[in-house]
Image 1 (cartoon, rainbow, N blue to C red):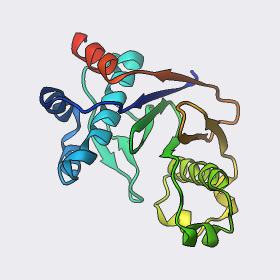
Image 2 (cartoon, one colour):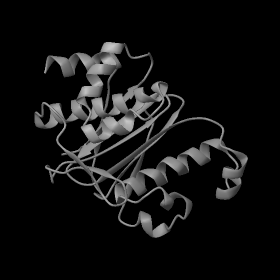
Image 3 (spheres, rainbow, N blue to C red):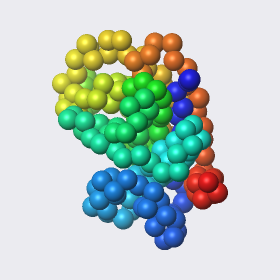
Image 4 (cartoon, helix red, strand yellow):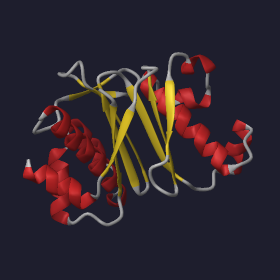
Length: 203
C-alpha cells in the first residue's frame, strides 16, 4: 500500500464545540500536552490528531485512535498496532499526517524569514534553500525516530537507506515525506476543517 498523506490548512478559528470534540478525540497523553499550550496554538495539534483519526478510520475502520506510546527519542507510535506507523507535523496554519505499514516521517513549515544566525550556522543564504533543507532533514530524523538534537548535529549517515519526497501541497509552506522503503509511492489527501469534522462525526 502506498503511504497515505493527509493535509489540512487551518484557515479559520475552531468553534468551541469543535474544539471540545477534537479534544475528546485526542489520546489522553497527547491531550494533556496540548492543554499546556496557549489557546491560539492548540488548533494545530487538535487538527493533526483529527487527521490521524480520519486516516485510521478510512484505512483501518478504527472508531478511535488506539493507545499511543512514546519511544525513548520522543517519537509517538501506536502501542497496540505494531503494523501501523504514523507521523504528524504541524506549523502555524497547516498540519500533515502520514500513515503507512513501515516507518515514515513528515514535516511541514510555514515560509518565513529564518534568523540570520541560523542561516549562518547552516551556511545557507537563501530562505527557500533553508526551508527545503530543514523539512528534508526533519522528515528524515522523524522517520529514524531521532530526537531534535539530530538537526543541530547532522550526520549524513542519517540519510542512508532513507528516501525523501518534497511535497508541494499548500502555497507558502514547505513540506517533505521520508520513508525507509525505496520504492514506496504516496497519495496526498487534502481536506478542509469542515470536511474533517463532518466525516468524523458521520462515522
